[in-house]
Length: 172
Image (tube, rainbow, N blue to C red; front, side, top):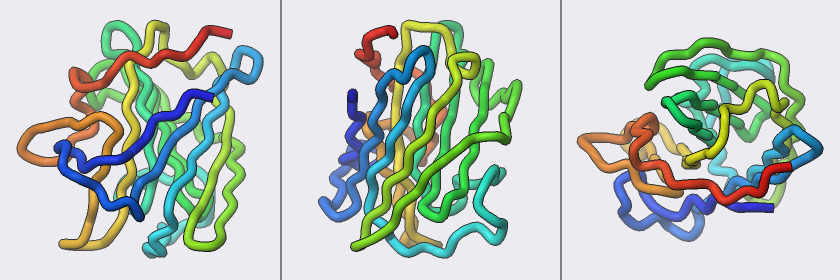
């Protein structure tokens, strides 16, 4: 499994050890298996039942971005209460699809949560990939935005694709 370690603030500043998360990637046949390991901050969940949740980025969440050539990219968001969001984009913030059906298994306990899912090959951008991963938690002025690779600027913007790094993941 290849891990993206979320160990710093969105701008490169230090993250507390207790808030660090990670996203693991591996092949399951031609599909991409994704695993999240993160602290459970106990933030209020979205008011909807677990499943497809537009606007999930406004809640406690871990995100994976996979970007192919020509700014074709996938955004996957997983929350500790079983909520998820998948966006397939072509161009910065230009969604072309938002698949609703995604099997996600979430486990919570001892102040941590894990989630696992598999992304069908048809949803994945063409390779080679650049990637970034993020974790968001907290409410109001205590909201925290963490990143694997910093996305410097005036504020946290996870769609700054120029700051993504090549992803070394062997093709299936």
